Each structure stands twice: as C-alpha cells, then as structure tokens.
Length: 274
Image 1: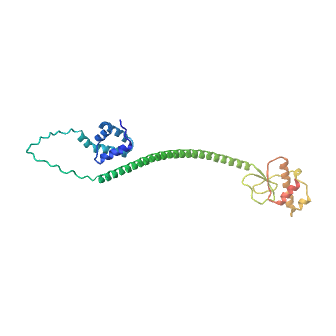
Image 2: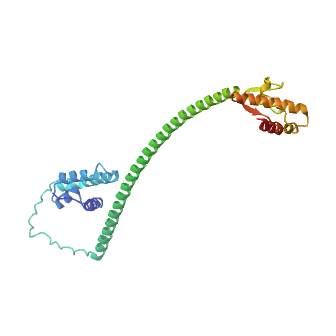
Image 3: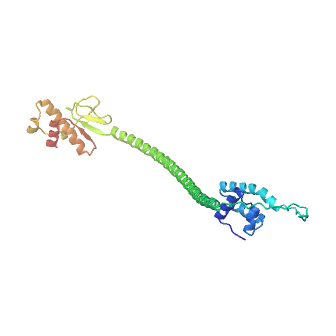
C-alpha cells in the first residue's frame, strides 16, 4: 500500500481545493481504493493538530460531489449513421493554447505550494515549541508550588521555635530576677546614689531601703594614720572603717555579696585594710 508523505497530502488537498482533482482520482493515482485513501487521511489528520483536521474535513466535503460524479455510470449514446442527405460538418480550428502562460502559472503554483509547505513546517515547529514551553511552564508552576509549600512549612517550624525561645527567655528573666532579689549588696554608709531595683541591701548605718547590720569588734580594723588622712571628716573615716569591718566579716564567713561604694576614699580604705 502506498504511503503518502506530508508534502503528498498538502499537494493532494491543494489540487482538490483548486477543483483540479478529487479523492477518487487521487486514490487511482496511488493505486488505492477511495475508502483506503479516506481511511489513511483520517488517520494522518485526526487526533493531533486541529487546523489539519479541519482542512482534511473540508477536503472531503469539497471532493464528495466530484467523487459521486465519477462513480456514476455514464449513459452510452449510439451514433446514428450519417445519411447521404446529412449536411457536412466542418470542424472548427483547434484553439491556440498559450503554453508559456500555462508554464508560468504552473511554476507560480509550485512556488506557492513550496512556500505553503515551508510555512506549514514552521507552523508545526512553532506548535511543538509552544507545547514544550507549556510543559516547562507546568513544571515551573509545580516547582513553585512545592517551594511555596516548603517555605510555609519552614515558617511553621520557625514560629514554633520562636515561641520556645520566648518561653525560655521569660523563664531566664524570671530566674535572673529571683537571683537579683536574693543578691546581697553591702552599701557604703557614704554612698548617695540610687540602689539597684532588686536585692538585699545591708550597711552599717541607717539608710532608706537598707538593712543595718552590726559588726562585731573583732572584724573592725584598727586605726590607720594613712587611712585617716583619706578623709577630711573624722566621722566619715570612722563610718568607713566600720563598713570595712562589715566587708571583712562577709569575706571571712564566705558569703556571696557585691559592693556598692561610689566613693574612691572608701575603695582605697578597703584595699588598705583588707
């Protein structure tokens, strides 16, 4: 069975569209029956490109009448013998055919068919590229959807971890406050600044918000001339010396504490006597 190429189909349909042929004649040309040719055309032009299918259906419709005319048997006409009285028939001269014009038209037709075939090929290529781009677009959409889902999942994890961090921060802050509340601060009797927000504040003299603790004489250092000269007022020196005894007592007993002094003279006396 003959196998028609894409160009064969294009030429066949062009001949039928121009009225120069029909499917019956085309089937005879390729040594096929009309049904075989139509079946081959249906297989080649359906289920794929919509434009090609539409053109093939149009071809079958345009060929239908001419196929029926060729298939219809012609009535035979017997010629009667001429009588002696019949007039003599004089044949008209054959028409003059401009072969150069027909040649030009055939050449132009071939050029148009070639251009049509080329453009069809380019159309098929463009449609194939379009289909591939559509597939690429679908793949990109799928990848984007997966990426968005991954981002959403990561955001959920981040929020969960953030809540846990915030819980630990609150727990740590609460613990630090408890530690500060129980932190012992030894406050110099000469200190005039502000005290921390939390803590246990102890000194040797009465101060607002500060506990007074007496220092046993064993912990109070003896007078030191150099220490006396640090202060202009003897009362300040004595108060500072007792405070030094408080610091010494806490160190001896191994207590945890921090100093709040704010006075270079008291700092110097502590370094001098302890």
